Image (cartoon, rainbow, N blue to C red):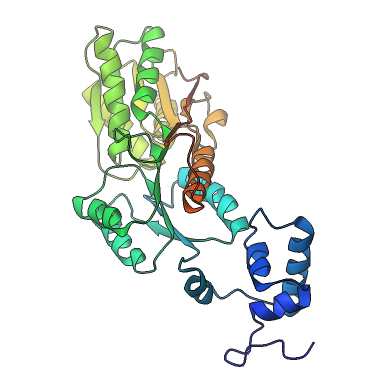
Length: 338
């Protein structure tokens, strides 16, 4: 085929793909973006033409033509946590077939860093934003509000009913853990938390409230702003034993802390659950294979990412959401450690 490349860049253009496929440029663009209104046979023909020409879409040109970028900003507090990796994978599985690219911002649980990421990434004119949780700096909240960019919050349901969000009640999860430990006859309870982001503190509040509602003394708090890890779990468990040796039930804000505690209990000859009941959070890989197998709260992180991405696409397509607040719930998975 002659003249298959742009004079300016030397690359095949959308017009060349359209000509080879025998369809209009509009249909070609929609087919490459997997717009569902394009017939499957046309999509196949366009993709075959694009492959034959080694065509690579030009996102800048697409933005100018549509007055909307194909980039979506996704902000998460950590990439070292398996929880958010699963969420990102689910989000990408929704966006990629539609031709959207993800701009991933990791703010390390730092509100100032999140604020800077929002400021910097808004200059790239993303067409949509996915955020983790509701709590952020006043400046960040103002930047988001004035940007006019559609956004969906993930992982939490929040108190702002006007916000589009997908998640579950962190406080209710904490209550469920307290009810479970109390049902096992545990009365000397402790909450062990790290990172201390808003969602961790909501779990703590629900845990403590359920204990108070049942008429028992508040749980002991062992808290640190340090990042959650197995090593930290060992350290915090040692601190708990030193400060409150009578403790008979512990709720760890994340499974990796619980893992460390269980390893240290094994080394010290502390029997779980006979002497001490242990409950984690998130049902991370390995929880079901611990010795003893870890009781934990299973969170729908992949489902949250998937549904948040779907809802954001609906907003971008001008569709009306069935509900702006999607509660995907959680499950207390009871195993041997409690």
